[in-house]
Length: 371
Image (cartoon, rainbow, N blue to C red; front, top):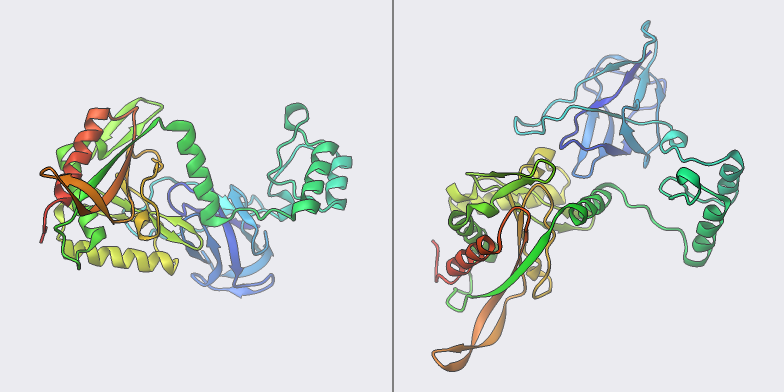
């Protein structure tokens, strides 16, 4: 037999979710024929066949999560019974992640192995309790009768919980990782943008200002390795721009914003947003960010505490633009104001470095024009 396992879907992602099988057991397939579509935390990817052959068995159903090192499908009629791995998923670009791993699916009954006795497993089945992500209170994390009954009561009272999938699951993991690792400090300020034209492109102005901030204080355009206590400052500014979608949060990366024209940046940003919405964005375009922008003010909110996701060390949040009473030359006047919230990892950057960064950002935003 030969098992087909999926190599490197990008960014070292440890799992994927089967969206749809394009073939069935017993079908004959040709090399490069699409076998299935899977959803990673970043994108929906088509999986081509690595060879001609007949499908003997599919491991997993639509909606099942595919775990590292487990087979996706089995080809029939092979003399080799060692469970050989076949197939290489082609890279979408040279900038794709270099991590190599195997990822595959097992039958749903084997996807998650929880510690429990046969009696407890039988009780969970009878009460229709999902145990995949349930933490056991028994010895060494073993699930107990009380654990099963407690969740069953909760399900009856409040309805079954909807498990996070795809992008939202990865977002939850990233936020938990950031909370555990980063030492965050948030600095807030207001930028006076009263002299802007009404037609000013707010996002482009923010991107231009971030480039100015990184030029003035390179310490925030960096990666930090918490285990090695090592910092890597970057010469190019690769800006991650948070994009809110119904599926969850995506952060596509605009490359080298300090050396590109504003027109080119706007075109690239439009394309990235379109690819995110259509779920056609390559995983490589969601990697390699060196600093992040969250323009939540397009929806609502004044200030925030944006989350720094390692290995980056800074994220700038922009709130809702509003008229604000300020003192100018001794007089109280109304000025258009853009609230800013800069969160930085205090392990990698000092308060002075953060203050110099946001000062440069404010000074750039105060300009009447950047064209």
